[in-house]
Image 1 (cartoon, rainbow, N blue to C red):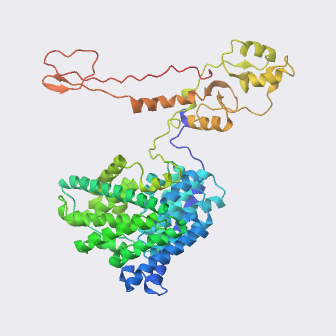
Image 2: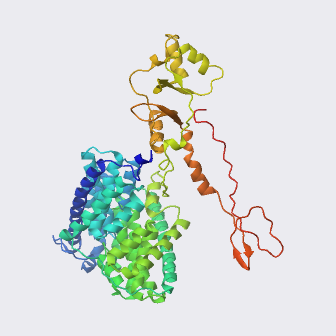
Image 3: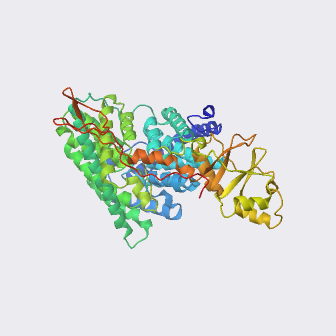
Length: 619
């Protein structure tokens, strides 16, 4: 039956979903452009009292002490929108998208698509220390979800379009289509199938090609550094450790501050305004910590800032970001992490051997992102696409991987999943191929099946098969070798009350029984047993002849898990033997090492107790 098996399970609906994703990618790019213009509009309104979408930085304001009031006014407006519009506008976007995917059947409301960019533009435009990527991820996801709902697609197809819209929006903001696809794989999809990967890739490609028409082309922060020497690998690992510690400190501080807000005796609607007081004060002392700060990130990467200015920006940015985000306002986390990571790199650069000082802000930036988001491959590629610096790609990967390892070891959850856990949902982020996906019914089914001929009288069936020596709970019923149904005691007792002498076959109508095919995956059959409430299902040769070839039960479907158990639990132990003066690896077959010999190399499995498999039809 191998000719019926392929690498993937898919159908022609994939083409339809991909076409819709392409349109969604273009719409997300338009939405991203609109959001960036909206942020600039509110920035000009709040800090320069003019109606304009010119790209002015809030750091250039001349408001004096009045600058403290701007974030407070913005926070108050965000609180009102969240209270009377949609509470989903609160937060930085990615956790909300994950929650919708895993626990909301990938459904988002039109309110979110409208109010999220509005609230975020107000929060960032009034000086909030956030990026535009989180809001556009939420907005793009809402666009994809709404399109899917319009076409009445399944939950899995909605998820593909939601994620496609979300990462297409990220592509439009940063011009990083490959990193956006990796963000989907590492954080949002929770699977790796053509039905989700293809729409996501197409949406990002469309957004990448559409972006120059609206937002410009080329890397956001062009940079070129020299390749690192051999010592650079060690220095990259040190950078990863420092960035991992930074991720731990920021995440821990954020949720402690969030707990502090939760203890306040006022409604959460007022929290964004209260948190914005800290933003305003920080912005008064260090204006460059306000807003998105893409210009500041560029200056840090190019080495255009004095060390004292970098230290001031990083400290103020970290404080106001933690306080503002904990207050429940609206804004993204990627841009602040990029700024703080680049700032730490600029501070550490003079002390990092193995490479020129200009490369370390970039490496620390990627490491901070990889550690905080727990997406190291995305972080490395993201930093590369932001700068176009191919020489830095390898150290970017090394630093991001070490930061990721640090946070995996020392943090139970990331900044994203902690938010969801506090809402009562736990997310386990280790993925592997389901053993039921790679095993087929023919591999686990019981081939020797006790069946009953349809001509047998009901009374005889009761006495022979369901008497004191009953062996199986249910039996397939066949007529001329073809399956017509499956019988159990409950069915027989009801039939016997009416006519005990009738043939067993009279109990079954023309409706075909539930079956499995040998070439089906165990996962498909397991899902069918669960939805139908069945314990077992007959296996037939094909849907034309219905010739019975076996039976598969829930117990049979556990068999593939034994191989996974062996891979995870069985261990190998080793010893070495000296042969002709050289240590060689040989299997130990019970040989005792002689005098002067090194212990022999042993390849043996730790004992694993596995119970004997009983026939699948027994209970």
